[in-house]
Image (tube, rainbow over the protein chains, first blue to last red):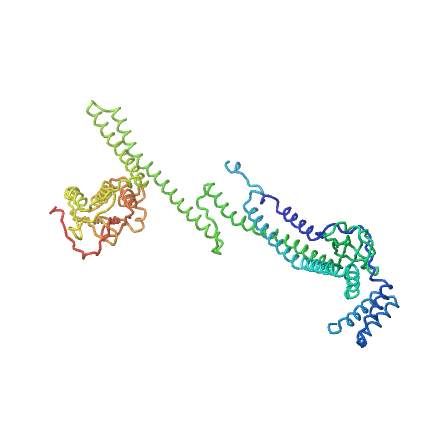
Length: 102
Length: 480
């Protein structure tokens, strides 16, 4: 109503919007729980991914780019940069499985 | 004091505050609508895209499970994880006892208690904690599928947009309040101007007027209207004051005279005859006073328009002939000539009106002409058509009325300087004016060179198809 003091009305509207913007709008999340560990970021997974790259190599041999990416991925995994290694191995695998659409 | 008891408006009762509140409300709603749209079109779009991708993924994997059973599902999931270049996909398949069968999570998250519901769960990838959106699906044979996507980037974007919108809303609130206060101030200034004038008028200062800003806006139009109203009120007040003064002045003399005669008769009358004569003269004075009051009441009655209901067709020819005949004798007694001129005696104009009032109005004009005409003068009573109007003019050769005083001549009790020593109450032309206005016409006073020409212009009852050429016919008073 117009008799509600102006400042209070606008402040209420602001707070309502802030609450709406800040809320997730989803069911219960895991805000207070321990984060879930993802298993596709381990050295073990990196090695298994390297094996998949080798296994997926086409009969006529992989492309130079795929080979280079696979080699870089293996090297990074050995050096401890697991995420970097996994990223390159995934690209290499993608090139081998879909050479026409890298 | 009346002003001391006047109610003062509270903050909520102020029109300015109400206008300001409406402005702020509209501005706030518009801003909230804009912010909601921006939110829906940015963060909301990204969220809908993620949810759509997960649902499509879920349907595809369910189809695989239907087609090739668990082995094909596992192979498909492993392949999708292996090819997930942006490293954002989360998959997990568990058996009926929640034992992991495939995917890149160690186990079913406890927070995902219900299937088909969206959850946002923190995940840790290479020691980096991020936020993932995920949803559980039921598969045949009691298996369950969990699919998720890393939405950390979206969460950052959402926080960024939310922060920006929050600041924008705060700025809008400030602007809304500032605009509302500006509107309130504008209204208060504009209304204070009117209020000051109204207070001054209420305090008795009728000369005060609303100041114009010169911008020609709505407030200026309102101010002009109010000022016109105040001018009209001022004229009316002056008229009332002048009438009151005139009544007091004009009635005091005959009343004082009557009282003096009665007092003198009471003290010095010798015999009944002298006493009776004094009483008769006093009665004549009181009759004159009574006549003035009757004239005033009659003018008021005419101005009220009550007699309009009794309007009927009035033929001017016999009316003017009667008046001409009636006043010819009086004119001859004073050595005057009274002429009646009609442009076409065969065709008498007809009016819609009150015959008695019209007769009285014309009699007043003729009476004035007789009183002010010098001996040997000529008075003309004429009638003519002027478009849709009929104009009846009484012209004399008397002193006339100076142009500067003509506009006041129809005021009640007005007497021109040249008429101070002529008998009369100063109500005759007021009554003529009232009769003219009652009939939708007007009274026009003009110079007759010499003398005065008083024209009563009244609407004709029916317009003539084509005005014929004027054919005046003179009827000298001596011949009538």
